[in-house]
Image 1 (cartoon, rainbow, N blue to C red):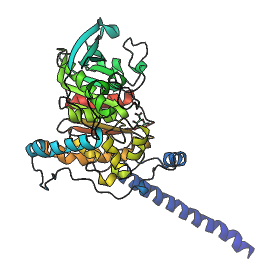
Image 2: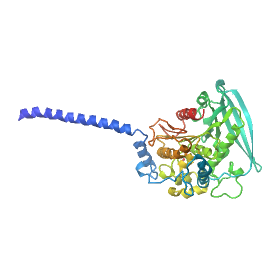
Image 3: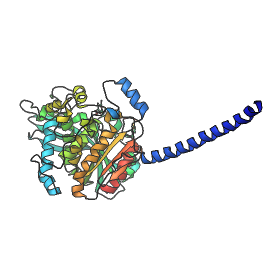
Image 4: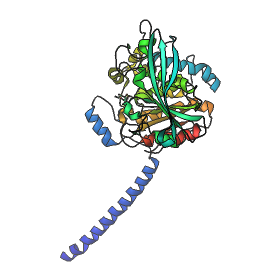
Length: 429
Ligand code: GTR
């Protein structure tokens, strides 16, 4: 007995160990297979857990996203299918543009105004001689009132002129866009953009309309709005977009800038604005919506992260009054944000997200871009994007559309800019 036990236990142990070993090999093989099939970005469960705890009224769980049906991009209000880019431009694009004006951002007034430009500073040997700095005042006047937009522009000296340009809508502290370059921020990386042969410019959103709710008395609203405000009167995002167009007006007068190759860039609220600016003004050849989230690229119907009700409560001045009709009523909205992106077609568009920025719904932003592609295909028939999101830090390009999820938090960094320039090298240069 004693002998049997002493002999058999090690033997059983060996069999058991062998079994465990084989199971581990099988498991690791199926893990490799599984991860090969499933490499696309997914929200990190720990981040989901953490955010859900700190904001219990906000949904961060993918499995709690409600079922939804997106409005058809290529079926017009009369129920006809749009078959060509011509039909798109003459008919459906106009309908969708009007729907966004009426229901989301509001209509820009047609009040007449005059504009003039004054180059108040020009330094041909900025950035150690690599660039020319121009500081331009864009003066708007109407009805005896005036407003000045301060545009800062660096033009590379050693690139063939006219040069393509980036225009950033700065929604952060103006220190981030220091023209003296004593403060260098990745938010507006002048030196690196110049080195790649692009001009880089910026205006401060508050110049056009201060970012606070004052019943639309200050900024450009106080100058161009006449009579009573209507439910579809423009909000602050539309005012900033209008400001971006005034910078474009200036570029048209500056022979250093190739105004057919201007990309409008914005981060977060600036990202929402950049997308709307390019929808409203087809002179922009490219738009970058960096982590633009709700009211930007993210699909409203997913109700993931920030929602329509939440954004209207937090920022009652950003959108038109009609947008409040969609508070907790997203399925009734006649548009969703894939249609905003489609308004930029056939021009270039870059949408981004950040891994930990679930408030801005990375997946909903990618789905929006993905669902805009039927419109791009009217122009570029072979164009496509993968159904699955790309892995983190891996930009994906489908013709004139691009997307990435950067690691880290809500921000605009040099890493993002480098990917924008890799893309613009292809689509603008
Ligand atoms: C947040 C807002 C977002 C986003 C962001 C920003 O508070 O909820 O929609 O725009 O601000 O602009 O940084």
